[in-house]
Length: 193
Ligand code: M6P
Ligand code: ZN
Image (cartoon, rainbow, N blue to C red; front, side):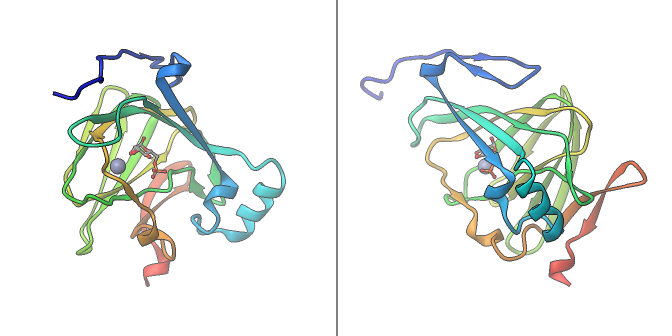
């Protein structure tokens, strides 16, 4: 038993992903300037950063202890949009504690979860509201909004997993998701050619 940790409840607005009350939730917004070099089209990135620097995604976390055996849970909201022809997405990460899984449950919109392993396996799952995805231990994950409204999903993983972003600093994920003829398609990332 963990002394001093009491049960807590939070509210999740399934249409917007907003969580509350403020005292029980942490929120982070990531703007395009926080994602320099992650999208393929550097010129489009610079123009968009200079002309509004949009919020690409936000996430909220319930205020649970960020350590095992507790759980970390909340929502992520990826806004609709593209940089060049590449859909708005999260930074994506491996868990620093690699033997930890995660569950995602889509609440709104249409998205694609890009996943990959260190030995080069890749997977992608297209989801809409009502679909859940299991991310096994050892699979990195990035979330892409492939629709025209907000892509909102609930996540839960172990506390204290940590985020490894450095692996993706130079080339990103092995796959990218771009718009072609009004539809999302998954392509090999040319930076791995
Ligand atoms: C989900 C979870 C979080 C993660 C967030 C943003 O909500 O997987 O752990 O922090 O997405 O993704 P990223 O950390 O890759 O920016
Ligand atoms: Zn994760």
